[in-house]
Length: 200
Image (cartoon, rainbow, N blue to C red):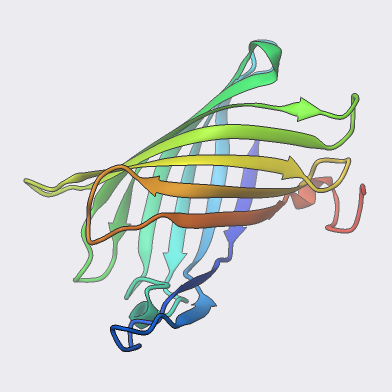
C-alpha cells in the first residue's frame, strides 16, 4: 500500500542570455523529487483509491536558465482515483508546496483529469487520451489563481503495461509572467512489476 517515487526532469527553454532578436535554446536538468505515497483507502470492486503523498523537491536544476528553484521545497497532497463505466477514469489531486528558502512563497494547487483507456486485447498495450485541468495560487492576499488546460495521451510502451509514456500540451488559460504554451512528456517505470526491458 506504500510506494517510493523518484522523479528526474530535463527541459528545453529559450536562452535568457541571448540577444532580444535571436532565439537560442538551452537545455538542462530540472529539480529532482523524492516522495512517498501511501494508499489510505482502496476498493477494487467500486474502482476507487485515496492516497496521501509527501515529497521533497531538491534544487538540482539550473535556476538561472529557468530549470529549477533556488532551494529545497516540501510538497504534500491527497490523490483520488475513480474508475468510470467503459474504462473511463477520473483522477484528482489537491495539496500545498512549502519552500524552505527565503525567496519562495507557499502555494496551493489542484489538478483534475478525465480520460478513457483503450487496450489491445486483455493484456496488450494501452492508450489513455485524457484532458487535465490544473490550478495553483500563492497563499498570499491578492494573489492570482493560475489555470492551465493540458490535453494529453498516455500509452504503455510494453504489453505488461509497467513502462508508460505520456505527451501533452500545456495551454495557459490565465496570464502570468508571459507564460506560453509548452510541450510536456514523460516516461514512467513502475519497477515493482519488473525492469525496463521486461514484459515487452
